Image 1: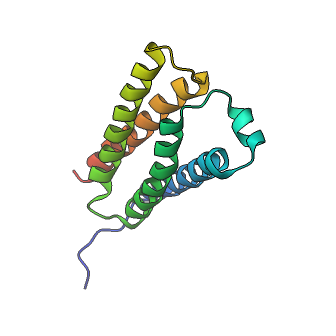
Image 2: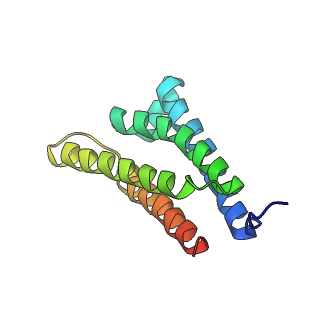
Image 3: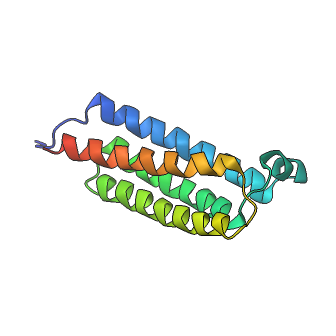
Length: 130
């Protein structure tokens, strides 16, 4: 007999959203890194270290999605770790931009969105464990 409580539907939904976010991140980042010149031209002045980070983070998003979906105890720390790593890249991006480096305004909005998304997940998972 299992004593583990069932995983709430909202948590399953968060897992699905995180998986979609991860898949989209891999697709978008991969198309810029590995795709044709037209894909790079479409995003404008991208910052290579940000694109590479986002692409690699897409794999972490998928691992996080699995952890959320399946109710793993390490889902919450992973969500906070992803948010913290993204925040660090955001700080490096800000330094790059303030130093006069070329960048796309899309990145200015995307990095805080990613941080906020994973912070939200971490907070929600904390509420469910109480």
